[in-house]
Structures are given as structure tokens and as C-alpha cells.
Image 1 (tube, rainbow, N blue to C red):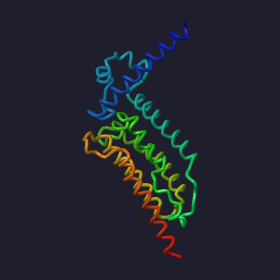
Image 2: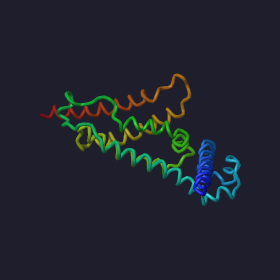
Image 3: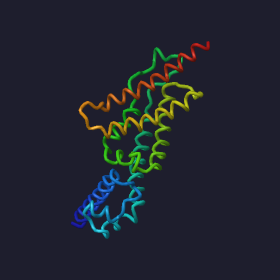
Length: 215
């Protein structure tokens, strides 16, 4: 009996947290994240200030918990995917062995954005989102893009740094455009992934051509 009561309270507590988080994320579309007041948030979430302070010390702690949860989930999934790479090959074998299909690491980004649509759209907002969150996210993306390049057999040469930066920026740009678009003519997630994948395939081919031309 006591366990059932505890589970019920835990469920209600989680629902309240989710309501607070959702109200806060929706307010970011209207106002810069660190200028949203507890009063505004409580009004939007239809809760008392006392209820808010039962869960969070202030707006900054709320944002930190939202970001922490997202970054932890993303990091964990990327580690799992990186632990199951495609068969490795030397770049000289590009024509025979290169897999032009988008790798799981690339597909996951859009699945993740889709599953966390409101949070990602709000946090990536160029005007009201948190730029420090973007920096933290870029750090994770850069790490997995490096892993993707290693798996593609690409050398750590002077082109690599440019590739990593460009592909990371394209991740953010494409995700933001895709999340914000509501038109029927908008590209699907698969189409956006294929556009990003052309950059990956092109980098592999450029490296291959450069290598065979210097022989």
C-alpha cells in the first residue's frame, strides 16, 4: 500500500516537473531564456511560486537540469553507436568499400531532434536560446563527427579540421530549419540527412582523389 502511494506521488511529481519544463521552453520562443521570471513561468505553468521552488532553486537551475538531461542522453547514445562501427577500411579502398548510405551516427541526430522537438527548437533559438548550450552540444557533435571520419578511413590531415567544423555547423543549421518549418513542401528528415551525407561522401572522395594523385 505504501509503495503504491509513493509511486503515485512520484508520478505526480514527475508530471509537475514536465509541466514546468514545457512552460519554460515555450516561453523561450517569446523571451531570452535568462530573462524569464519565476512569476511569468508560474503563470504559464499554472502553479504557485512555492511549487516551483519545491523543484528548482531558480531559473538557472531549471535550465541546467533541462540541458544536463539532454546532453547526457545524447552522449550516452553516441557512445553506444560509436561502439558498433562499420567495418574499417583504408582510404585507398574508397571506390570498392566506401558505404555511401548515411551512417547511424548521422541518422541519430535528427531522430533525437524529432524526439525532443520543443526543447531543441527552443534551446537552439539564435535569439533567445542559451549560447553555452550550443557550445556544449558542439563539443559532443565534434567528437562523434571525428569518430565517423575515423570509421570512414579518412586521415587526420589539414582538411579534417575544416570538415568537422563545417559538418557540425550544418547539423545546427539544418536541424533549426527543419524544426521550424511547418510547410508541406519542407524537406523530410531523411532528405535533410541525405543532404548532410553528401558532405561526408564528398570529403571521402576528395581525400581519395588527393591520395591517388600524389602517387
